[in-house]
Amino acid sequence: MPDVPPATPEARPRRPARRVTLADVARAANVSPTLVSLVLRDRPGAGPATRERVLAAAADLGYRPDLRARSLASLDSQMLGVLFGQEGHFHLELLEALYGAAEQVRWGLALGFSTPTRDEATALTSLQDLRFDALVMLGPQVAEPRLAGQLPLVVLGWEVAHPEVDVVRSDDDAAMSLALEHLHDLGHRRIAHLRGGPGLVAASRAAALARAADRHDDVTLEVVECAGQDQMDGFLAMTEMLADADALPTAVVAYSDDVAAGALTALNQAGVRVPEQVSLVGHDDSRLAGAEVLGITTLRQDPRTLADLAVRRLVARAGGEDVGERVQLVAPTLVQRRTTGPAPA
Image (cartoon, rainbow, N blue to C red):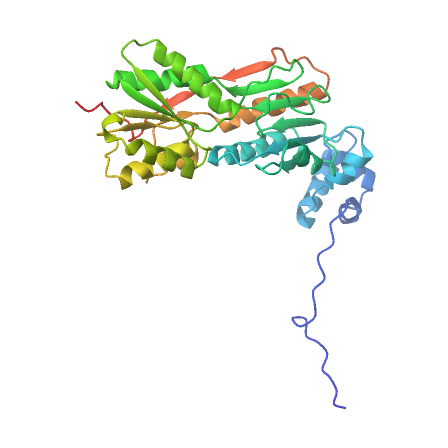
């Protein structure tokens, strides 16, 4: 039987890399694991030179903390649970901002995802593997969260009446007043609202726009229901409006930038010029609205501000601090781009 040559390094199966531990960092820095733990948790007990050596060793080895082990070993896990759903481009930006805000206070995030067929209870179950001290809800939009009163909880975006739930959201009345006044100043009097489905945020924005329109006797407001909150919903709702060309408004305020983008596609396909024939306003100022190919005038919510306020409020609540008023409204701004212009004569 011929000799079989030994396998070359390239031919040998590679074992998955082992997770770097505190003990590995301690050996590399020539200190005890306890001292490594103190340095990495930014606690006193190590001199400047030792601290620098430990941090350098951790960075060189690619050490990352084992959040599950930390939560099991400590009464306070320093973990934020985040419940979110399919809410469009802006919620992805909010989620990204939450990561940054949590890193600033040295907390971790544990994510639970809800869908139309995966409700709040099911999504919360997925968070049970990692203990969390507080919860941020980006969705689903429920009037009374299941964990209300059981732990510090913030909803981001809609109103909740429960006295032990904090609310951080954009000021819908201020936002819709900005949109209405902007269009009114441009001469628009027949305005439509593409409402983003039956959710609580959609209801709040629709009611706020109606209050803004009521302040002008010369404004006629029509509310058009979308089936949901994505681009296809906006496209289909606008297509339905276009079926009656004589009743077409001169301006449209959309529930979100996603809905506005879908509506803009429908207008373009129908040969309706924007903004010469119809002006269009979105909501959120997501990256989608700012894309050069779209350039949607929109109402800006700042995801970093919202995320920072929510995280700092929850960390304070978890530490037993008084955070003041339960509801915190954030002022929006109008970002004018190329989808709004003077009303047609």
